Length: 340
Image (cartoon, rainbow, N blue to C red; front, top):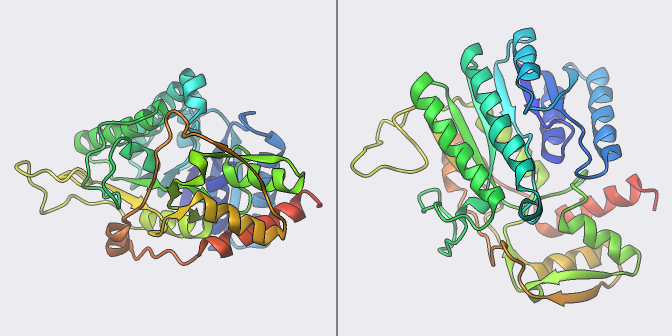
């Protein structure tokens, strides 16, 4: 298939593009290579995609563009006819949204609008896009289910992602555009983002620096390994969203519709405390961490726990990596990539 992956030089986008190339798809990757974190890491990911395409049956074309630039998006869709669009480009980060909300409007609202419009006019068969577990916000009922209320986000980042789900539904309803939203739960693994805890903790432990441990390490996260996430994204993208024949306006399910629209959780279904996560890093490095215990930060959810049973029933998604396995793979990659 011809597949567009936005954010292809980003953490998740890179892994998705690589797996698509390896199975023989023709991949176009869009990324603006911004400096939210070290662009050298993004360039290294992009170079590996180019090298992978040279060795495999698939092909890869890198487009350097900002999804908020509508002319660039229109040109891309006019140049290539896509069988699938996997939209992963976004301004990520929970705490950064408190400091710089305008960046989230540009990427997550304006950029997503441009993608929706391009898919509409080019009659894209299926759009799959990234949402987040952060949409559950003030909800404390565990595990998080797609049937739960998500109208009380705790940060602006989550609000923009919830807006994406609503925007997607409107396009599914108005223009019959099949859309699938995936709510990611704390993705980690090799080639990860330097602004995330695993990257920071690993670096600080190696350098004998204290690591900031919010909520005294007592909160839990449904840490999900990147290979499981990648498999789930591609399985969901391959199966085109359809209207739910059982949907009723009398008792409306929030994760489906009488339009070709659906939303899924994609997690590990097995939350781990931050303390245990740190222990897995210490084990992989064979070195103890210096802990700097801190209170819960504004905008942070105390716990996350995914119910991914709907995704399993619909597309066969089944996570298989434990935190110990996943953290070990990340640490091995980190030591190799940074020549430690």
